[in-house]
Image (cartoon, rainbow, N blue to C red; front, side):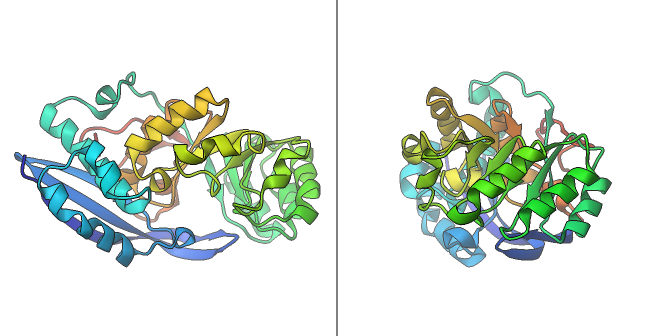
Length: 327
């Protein structure tokens, strides 16, 4: 099968600012791969992430480097050896899944051997701010059942108290984005326990998290920056209770599905996560959400403008993608 590849960089404005421990941004910059073959079109979206040394330019260059193989008909299995795990492979892998579904008439979930997807309850993210700002943001989102709270290190206990005061009934998960250190780890975990946090995501820098195996984890700890694909899962045992599976880290849905299976076998809980992207990025990740304990696929909810057509959200309920969106 001869395939035509098109690559595009697109920008989608964010509502206000999205702020984490590493900085703030006002737009989601994404790279989209589009594959055309036999009158069908398959699309995949990725989000380059500077934390992993990626930029829009580097991701486009990586995709272009495998153009000859892709256009000659390389399938998803071949793609795993053509590119390493990361954003570039994710865009192509998801585009291939979509193209396969469109050319075969068999939905992606069926090709993956999964049951028909059900609606999911996604977390809604609160950006880092002052305690007063975060209390106000939590109050505005208090009707949502699951809130993901971004933290930044110093002052986090005060932020947590403020968020809980603003959203008294919501389940809270927190994400420190590697901002904590050994000297404040136990105090911050205790602060999380006091307000009933269900899960703490990546408290310490990847590669500096050995202490997690030596402490009492009063709140479950989830690996994000420390967990990329199956290769690193075994090393996380004893330190983490859960892993955040993001397609931009695994390099696509193919590896993400395999990682989810192995994570379960090793006893990890699973979070289905995302970068800030559009419905086109969330749609394949929603298949991981079907087996996840925590779903964090709120990218389109943070945008001022999504793709059209996009995924259907009703409050925090994410409905399965239609073929017009993906898969």
